[in-house]
Length: 389
View 1: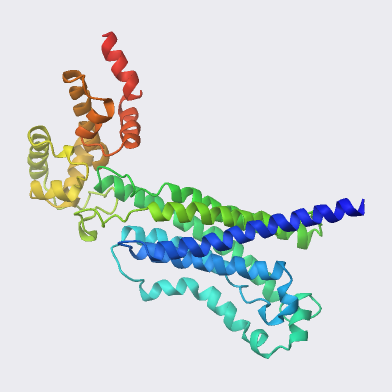
View 2: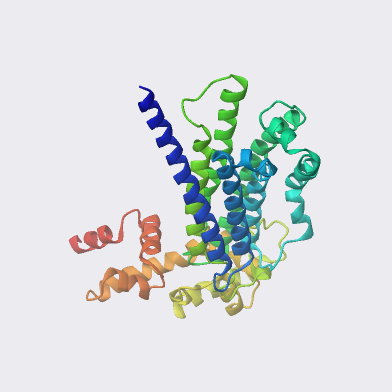
């Protein structure tokens, strides 16, 4: 029986070691990969530094888990405030995904104040406590930092959840910005970040639950409960690192500038656009779509169409929303769908994907999604119905 227990302990320890090693290696690898990414932008740098920070955090826990804190007590608590970094990095990543900036603003660094304050408070521990005293603090024999540790734990949970909520709201705003300005959103949409935000929330909720059961209720888990949230962190690293590398900036492959962006679906009550001018420009817009077919350009933006009509992007967005009752993205793709149907009926030798690309779509997945949105069936089903008719 003793042999079996020892074997199970070994297996659990081995499993935890594997999880941590994978997380550490991938964090540093993906962080370096993002930092060396061609044509990288500020968001790439933010994500790169964040991944490296996660790597350092995981390394700190790995050293604790493998018993290195007992051998080198000066390592105790060296990464304790790192969970305060997760929320700010997430928020700043989303925030600057709709800004064409090369560096953070000075006020952005205030988001890292809790981590800095924590390190400042722990300076006496790091530099003035003896080796023996540090070990006793770690084992709870000295209560100098017990209240502070509780405050930090509560701060971690509140920070992670509140920043996740703020990031989700910013993400929703960004999705509206994309729909108001771009006709194709392949590689620039950040729907994947919803799952990343969910991952961050899961980490801090798990920390909260484990802490409540372990510290307040005195429940003893039959395994190392820390593996729960560290496993989520490792999964988060893999998912976010891979998605971040594939992510494209709004401005890198587009003619639109930040100043030309329509921020969101505007409120037009205070608009300077007169109704007679709006009607005239709406007629010109429909004529442009019919004769010149600008929607055949897969990278068409609202800024390009606004220039063709000699109107501002905000006014064009207003016209489309008021007179067509859709955003720019749906307005353009509605024409692409009709172009596709017309092409299929007139030339049956092409493949469906070939017709889709000729109609202004830039990928099969986008085409299928958009087509089903407008016609409620897949392209193949729709074509089959046409043949029956």
